[in-house]
Structures are given as structure tokens and as C-alpha cells.
Length: 385
Image (cartoon, rainbow, N blue to C red; front, side, top):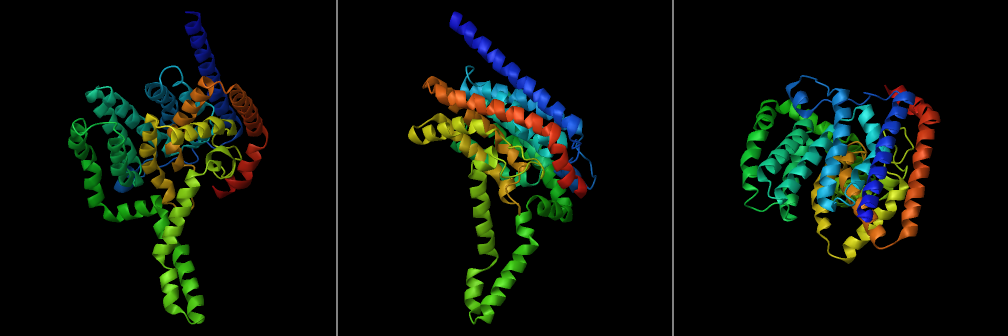
């Protein structure tokens, strides 16, 4: 009895601290950095129809709040009620969604669709087929109608869900039957406005339209030809090899922990704040190590995540922290599970280090936002407006 009360009290305290920092972080950004609405995007469907409709900032901020709720529900279904609540807490203390939501990034809204998809999968696994199918279709509809690259992601996302055993062939019949109806309007308008589709695809998938690609290939071939080896130049340096190298480099960069837990890549092009606090790297790596050592069901998260890397890998300048936020839930789920295992295996020293690092970085971030971040914003982003 006493143990249950203690666990509930701890759970309530941690959630309360997370929500407090969630609010304070966003209030500080609103107060000191004028980035609100700076990156408001137009959804795929609006661009396709030439309507130029921008998703309102209030909807993106609402999505940011609802993502917390969805992470709590999905996290507790995946990790259990004892530690599943850590996923939304880690989201709440992460500067990544805070900056993107207030700047008006459409990917926070797309992340809402991804989390609805995850919720649908967990409900189907619990035999709540009607609700599960409805959430899956709604989530996929939000993602595809918001961004053209998600059309490419969609089949691989469904394949990953199927191969990971999230739904059986029998349970997938309703999804396969109804999904074409959900996608019919976007397919119809894409066929009707092919010129607009090509322009939108070139914007979202910029790797294949990089001018530097042709210039570098031609320059290399010219140098090799002048040296007397024209055929060798064509074999070694061409569009396929160029794209191959860039895709491999972009892929490896998206898998590197420093992309997420350090200031290696700046948020919105100006912030030195890391996307996720360095302290959470400890439970994240601990969980990854356990996944390789023992067979755990949570490995299926990778099959659901890999397709979501496509929007950033297929960009010229990668990693793109804007679109890469779509894999944030997986990082949070793995980090939450790693924290659970650290506590269960009595790795108290590591838990203390995590708490201290997160507290120090959280305090530093708030101080940074109120002092140095406005200067960085003025020197980098503001002149480009």
C-alpha cells in the first residue's frame, strides 16, 4: 500500500516538474525571442491547389500540447504505467519541439499525425480494431495531406508496422480497404496538377535537384578528361555515385547521437541549444545496448522509425532538425525504457548523473534564452527575413 502511494507521488511530482518546465520554456522563448510564426508552412494539399493556405500558429501550438497527451497514452501502452509517463516528461523538457512549435513548424502538426498512427497501432494490438483503424487512417491522412514526402514514406511505414507484428493480415484488411478512399482526393489532385506536384516534390525532396550536383560532376570529369582518362571520369563520378555518397552520409548523420544530444546542428539555424539534453543520452545508449544483448519486443520501434528518416535524408542539407523531429517519439520511448532499466538494475549513480545533467542544462537553457539567444537570433535568422 505504502509502496503504491510512494510510486504515485513520485509519478505526480515528475509529471508536474515536466509540465512546469514545458510552460516556462515556451514562455521564455515567447518573451525573449520573436520567432513565433516565423516558419509557418503551407500544407501539401493547399500548395497543390495553389491556395497558399498557411497552417495557423494556434493549431501548431495546440498540436504541441496534444502531442504530450498522445505520448502519455502511447507511452503507457508501450512501456507500462510505471514508466510510460516518462516519454511525455522528456518531451516537455526537450527544447526541440519548443522551438519548432513557436516558430510555426508544420512538422509539429505532422508529428501529431504520426502519434495518432502509433496510438492506432497500440489499440489494434489490444483488439480495439474500430478505434485503432480510425486513428491510423486519421494519422496517415494528416501526414500525407501535410507533406508530399510522406507519400513516399507511407508504404514503408505500413510495411514496418506489419513486419513488426503490430497488426496481422486479418486486422489490416480494413486499413488496406479504407486507405485508398482516404488518399483518393490527394491522388486525384496530384494527377490534375502535375506541374505543381513537381515543384512541391522538388522543394520537399531537394537532394535530386541540387545544382551543385551537376557542377561538381562536370568539374571532376573535366579534370579527369584533361588528364587523359575521360571514360574513367564517367565511371567514377556521375549522378548515381554522387547521390549515393550523399544519401549514405545523410543516413549515417541521422543515426549519430551527437545530432540529437549536442549543439552540433543549430535549431532553426541560430540556437546553440541541443535538441535533447545530453543527460538523456545515458538511458538512451543503455537501452540500445540492451536491445543488442537481449531480444526485446521494443525492437519494432526501429521498423516504425526508419521510414520517417526519409524526409531529412532526401534533403541536400541534412540533417534537417525540422523534419527530423518526426522520430523524436522513438528516441523518447527508448530513453524512457532505458531509464526504467537503470532504476530496475539499481544503476543509481547513472540515474543521479542523468538528473544532475538535465537540471544543469535546463537551467542553462533558460538563462541562455533570456540573454544570448536574442543576440544569436538577430545575427543569423532575423537578417534573412
